[in-house]
Image (cartoon, rainbow, N blue to C red; front, side, top):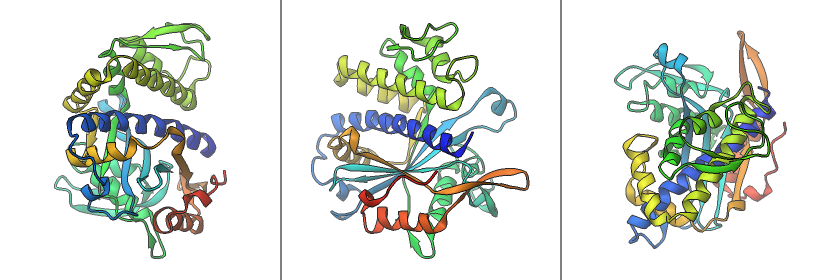
Length: 325
């Protein structure tokens, strides 16, 4: 996949991840209504600070499971929520970004550190229930420092199993949407179909044998599916359905987070005030490069330093233009 395509794909997935966070946050807001003041206080932050956390889109497949290779973080995004300006800035990190990554032993101790792909940090942490999230945050924190200019340390994460999301949609009776591509076993382009169960799973997972296939096509279909799911929730008693969805997501581990209930509720307060068009994306400039037969994304460190300064120090993201492709 070319870098420009990878960036577009990540933007699509970021929208899905933020939407899933909204579902989680909405439930917390419903059940923890006593948190109605300044959400920043819950995080121990000042009025002009941002709430920063790492979003990871998780995926696995039969081949990886057969080899006991487990989960991978196909999408990595730094989300910065600005309650004062009512906006979210999302910094997308190409999964092949070359940076220092640590390998951990079964007790979480660092055994070695080397220049590697940033998304390998998750695999080197021995899984979702062990140290993978912490190792990923460590890699991101290390990457987001250039010549002494650095973002505030990321200590919170949200991990989302995209396949599990389909099972949540089944809980509300599936979704209806209009196909943008012809898909064997599902329907023709332009046809409105009802998706649940295996059909819904095929719809969000299929990459090949379909017009508009590959990662980009799959990402666009996932976006359609999530939007349809959100509409179904909104139109069908969200006060009843959202808590049910959240409980299922928590019980089945479709969503992982180290945010506590008060922090999730505080995020709900902040996010509920942010319009959809106030979610901004910042891409890491750089170039592809082959090193020892492996393809890496090599960041432009001067431009990365400016992004860190603008987003986290000067907080003038409005001056940032889209990264050069």
